[in-house]
Length: 316
Image (cartoon, rainbow, N blue to C red; front, side):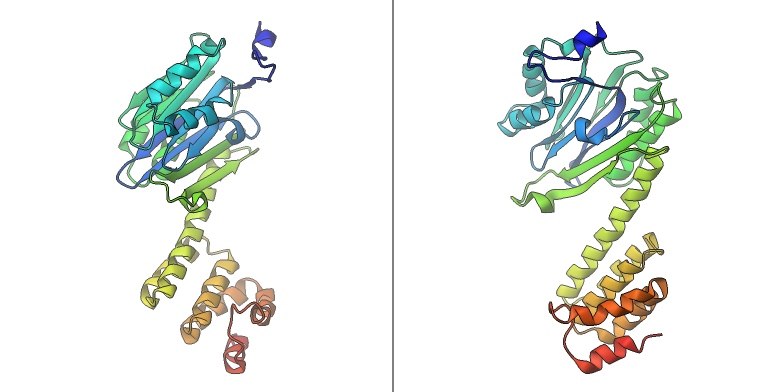
């Protein structure tokens, strides 16, 4: 019977992605996201779906990935999550083995756990979120996920990660752990989707995917602080830029390139003396970065000024 379920009416393979996930919306911060962990390779490529200004989807169990793009299309056309999910389930002859959750940009949610999903399986919805899991070690997984999400402070990524960690603390996936993913977008679309994607992280295959996902979230935050610093430099606010660059380096002190590009941005905007301590940190971390400085002149990233280049080269 399992083999029969692995093929839908369109002859597409149905992957048996047994896992736990969360869809959630933070209306105050203007963020919505979906996060997942599973003992399955590259789970994020199958389970997590999002569109800025529209909504987020998690589709799992004996998974039909089309619930992702179709659900987003229906919500984008004005359907509520409940209406979109109901319509797709009604057209799916294998609805009883699906587990799906939808959330729209307003924070409305809908979820479905098919009667034939492999135990332990279930979901719980709350204000602006839904948690769902199947083939879990215990049936306490999804209630503890909900509790962790509701009780954790911080941005949406922090709260969703807490939900995943709570699932793992309850035993998680009966088969173990392998991959994880988190996708966060803005609830208000700007028309430039590359700017509306806050996080898009995947741990494809790892012995401790949640720990690695946590690390990648911090890396992402470091680069976000760098972007903030660049924005402050462009606005002429050197003090705020320095605070942002320091925050980035504090999150990734081992990454010399963060200090280097922060310094280069400052130097290219006339703050050469303030940039020198950051160049020192960069050169100490990776001496070869010193050779990169003159190469930045041709593309215009650093002014072709002999005195400026001499100052930077004299940094020890």
